[in-house]
Image 1 (tube, helix red, strand yellow):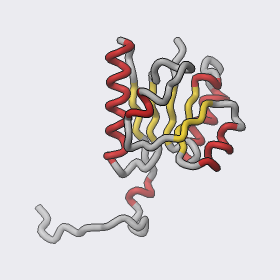
Image 2 (image 1 turned 45 degrees about the vertical axis):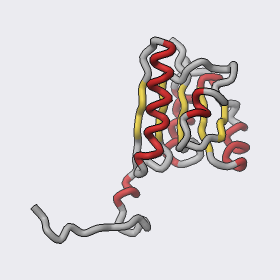
Image 3 (image 1 turned 90 degrees about the horizontal axis):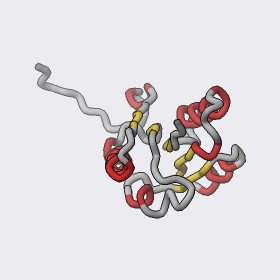
Image 4 (image 1 turned 30 degrees about the vertical axis):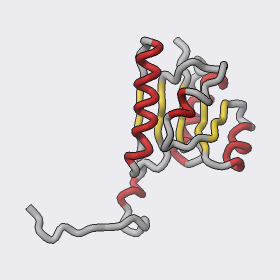
Length: 136
């Protein structure tokens, strides 16, 4: 069964590792089935050398997943692996909504996989930190 897989954050460590693993350890997955979501032209250029589909996306907007992409190459994404900005849940919702709409229209199972690294919990990550002064 062929599955079109979208990996967000594909230019990062976790996303890039997933792309590399799909291409090297899963012969049933073709390069035409791997879609990498990136933010910059530089990221797109680097990943396009792998022969995969590179999509420059604004992850806060579900419409490109439904209209601008997939064009004629793909009718649905079966799997979205979300590795980009994993501590901002607002970026995951448009992806989940687009996947749900694709599931409804295609009538096929879809999967959303969310990943995160421990840096999201690192005290010096630059993210605001609050202390609960009234525990319990």
